[in-house]
Amino acid sequence: PAGMSTTLHVAYPHLIQYLARCVPWKGVDIPVLFQHGLVNRIDVGTSGLVLVTDTGNSLVATRRASVVDRRVEKIYRALVLYCPPPESRAGSEEFWYLNPKGAINWNVFANGADYSLQLAAQDPERKRGLPPAFMDRRPATTMYRVLNYYPSSGVYYLEVQLRSGRRHQIRQHFAQICHPLVGDGRYHERARSMGEQMGLYRPALHASRITLLPSSLDSATDAIDVASYTRKEDSEKTVVECPLPDDIRRALRWLQEKEERGKGTDHV
Image (cartoon, rainbow, N blue to C red):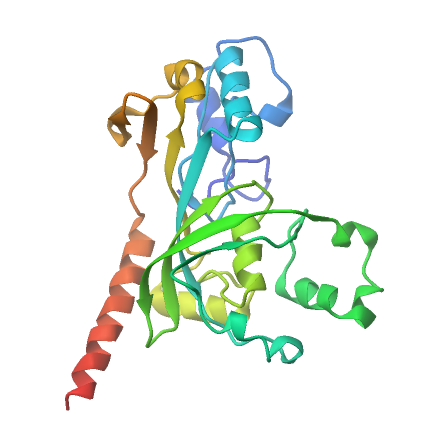
């Protein structure tokens, strides 16, 4: 669930503590970097899937499949809100709307960055005053597909796929193209306000599906309790799914009801 840390964040309950009790590690001690067999991590405010292993062999195999071989596909669901660009980018037509599908290939800040820092980095004068550590950027690619658009709210419902795994990658990328995640006040205050109207008090981001492709199957799935969330699409891959949480479901209903009210008004 959202609100649970997959890192050693002192301000939130740790998933690692739960795993230590319920999924005992069967191998020798491992570095804290791997954090009790976690293959991937999600932000505290993100809900959804996290892959966990309980042996050294399955951990190494699954991390290699994910990071090196790119044989673990991670799919997210997200709500993003169009926010007008700052004056310095006001003439950029590319930020007015999202195409039905697309790719974002911009560098992201390695340590994450709030909205004010992103604006400062785009201003030559302000950029010179930033500490070098804040300017550490890494290449990243985010693919997306529009599932629905709610014009009266300016909100898009998206399916998002990561081609790389940077900190706050999805959050940074969509903020960079003037469509921050609904509820994500770190990257835009207007997005926070829209989230509060919907009853969303976190970024509207959910890790909904992970697909393990052939080379990762034997070692990875042996140690992962996928239970009823797993389905075999064919003999070559395993798909693990997690349904949308209640807060995002309520937000989608709110958006749909607003659209229907608007249509009713048009006919009056």
